[in-house]
Image (tube, rainbow, N blue to C red; front, side):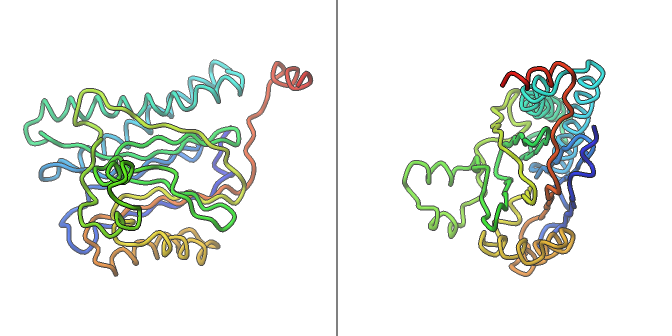
Length: 274
């Protein structure tokens, strides 16, 4: 079952006011319910190589997994249990390819990328992230950051050296402690959550929260909720108006209606005994 009609989604990216080229990459597969955003880092042009590999690999890996599961006619419960594993494995696969490319191509040495991804299925969403790109959720007027940055600053907050308010004012916000491609293996942080109608999910590179306070992100999405395209454009404009020191990318997706998986005969029989 395609999920395309269950969501409204937009994706936008901008070089910003300072950088000469854009090292972010974004991609979606709404039929599979997949959103992916990456923020590359490394030598000249290498960052955009890493982020591009990450997004393409995850889109291909998850797309192929969804097709394979449909061919195998997996029941919805089994597929739901495997969903987070598929997303984690897709990110791990991207890490392996980026690392191998960086070691084999001198011009790509030292490259890496952050990653955030959402995969929706059966009224649930699996989240995966590595680095300091973020996923937010707006639900019933409340904006919540669902991912915690893999950064030195966040570790200092976790250990009590900084408050969240002090961290927000810090100039040392971009030292990531985890990224794709830097090592042969990477620890992918994954979680799962219920997805409700009217929820709005925001995936963004650090070029947004570094320039724009969470309160302003919240106000912008709430104000322009009738048009995700306008909301995304305004978020990028805010980042640039505040200095635009980095590339800025956003994916906004709103759940339009429930998207329960179609249950086969076995699933319908099981539901009778619950």
